[in-house]
Length: 162
Ligand SMILES: CC(C)(COP(=O)(O)OP(=O)(O)OC[C@H]1O[C@@H](n2cnc3c(N)ncnc32)[C@H](O)[C@@H]1OP(=O)(O)O)[C@@H](O)C(=O)NCCC(=O)NCCS
Image 1: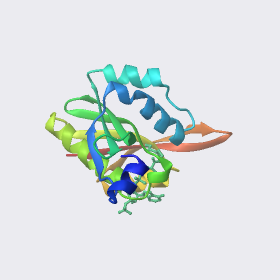
Image 2: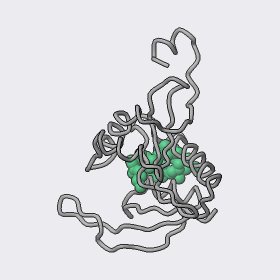
Image 3: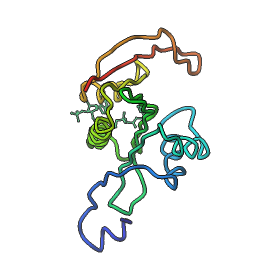
């Protein structure tokens, strides 16, 4: 719902969870670009969303609102790998990623997934806090894997068994 709609109704929209669809590709590219140094383009998201192994969920501002958060996994049961997850900067630290990821994992479990893997920058404290909160544990470390502006940081490989 628009801000005007909210003011008229007097109540804020409840965040809404749904499967991602092809029309979301521009919003997902925008969210990705606002969250990572190397953003993925609209065409990249269009390609991913047509891949039968890709499963993505979005959180929107009300049932008809645009996505402000998404999570995308590549799934080949019994394994799933989180390829990307982001919340719009203005919507962070309100529990949205926790709720979105819990929903995503429950949907993957229904597909027969028994383990979820991911890779995260060891310096990304927000993401690490989220993943620990959802029960992920460290399964490996790639030394100096990420390099940005002359700085190197490790990649943590994490897993969560269902
Ligand atoms: C990581 C990210 C998705 C978290 O989204 P969020 O909606 O702000 O997270 P939530 O509010 O649901 O927080 C869930 C948990 O994460 C942790 N957390 C979130 N932000 C944090 C921060 N800035 N510092 C430390 N811990 C943090 C907390 O443990 C929190 O649990 P709590 O609510 O019980 O305290 C968000 O910061 C983001 O989009 N970052 C950029 C993209 C990114 O790094 N994606 C992950 C790549 S692998």
